Length: 151
Image (cartoon, rainbow, N blue to C red; front, top):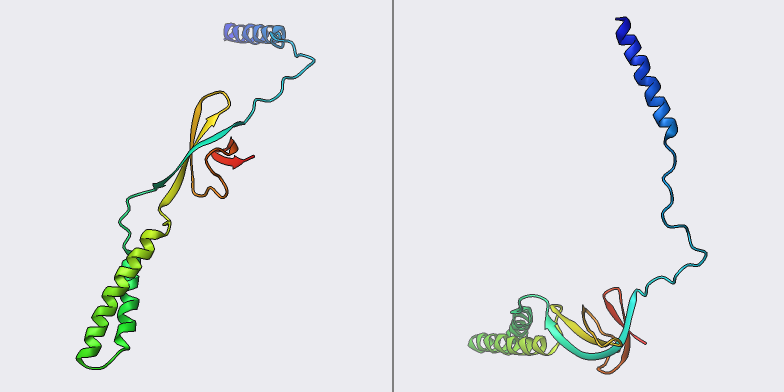
């Protein structure tokens, strides 16, 4: 029993002596009196190309369906009997064609822009964004945070 107390006391004393020897780690690179500027977080260049691309699968028929319904309702207001039925069918068909054409000509919610920028260092960077506001091919731009901004 006495040996156990002696071993425990020697172990604790050794640990305390070794802990006292430990000091802060020596500094390998002393701090410098000057600081370098932070790295640039943006790139500068010219717009090389702008493309309209589809975000997902196309095939959106909402304009056709809505146009058909509206055309059918308007056609139903014309005439009576068999003439009313014919006007409803023609109105629905005409409305569907008109709705499809309007949807085809307008930029849909599933379209976005791919902007290719030729950077000043000669490299190319491509950015995809939902709007391009006033960007045109040849504009001087800044690419920052995944977006292209005109300078």
